[in-house]
Amino acid sequence: MHSLRTGSYPELEAALGEHLAGIKRAQGPLAPIAVLVPTTLLRLHLRRRFGDSLNIRFTTLAELVGDCPSNLKPLPPFGDEIILNTIIESHVGDGSYFQPVKATAGFRRCLLGTIRDLKEAGISAQKFAELAKSAKLNRAKFGQIATLYTAYEEALRQHEATDEADRVAQSIKSLATSHCPLAFSSRPLGSVCLYGFYDFNHLQRQLIRVLAERQPLQVFVPYRDEPAYAFAKP
Image (cartoon, rainbow, N blue to C red; front, side, top):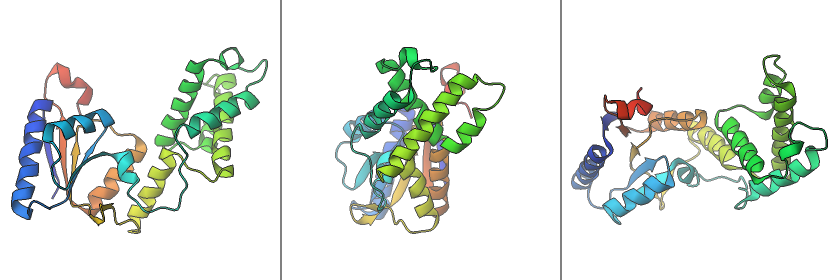
């Protein structure tokens, strides 16, 4: 059975500690537990907070995806940036919308962030190209983003490589068809907690939905009925 706990972060930390201790008491000290968190910083904090507890894994969703057996070839570190730099040089010419800023680091970071956001939202390069033709948008701007996004996806295919969003999407398919056992150090994943999430992108929602169909989830959401927590209001 799924459960939901809300409160301030100090309250949630205390509740998480009680929950983890309860599992260990009921199932034994070797019982595997996965605590899924939204950021690496929160993961590091919880590791320091709870120490090196036996068989308790604090991990992000992206790291969880890495546990799924896959024959997909991931990009090397900074591979997406290198690919995008090459694409910008070849596709952003004189007179094009982004030509004035093509050489700036800020443009490259923003473009890569935009592509990541689109993929995480489930918007393919083909779909975005269709949307870019809308009369309500700046066609020169969005048309060039669509061209760059399409070229980025084509470059991934040519290199037979995948980025993080591709691997999350593949993991969702694998989980849905029971081809991915989700191992934790060659053992079952065990109890699963979602801690600190208050917003999900499209791919994350799909992944959580598939996980919830396979096993109970204990969810800890940072929310109280106070102005300071308005950002997390359901």
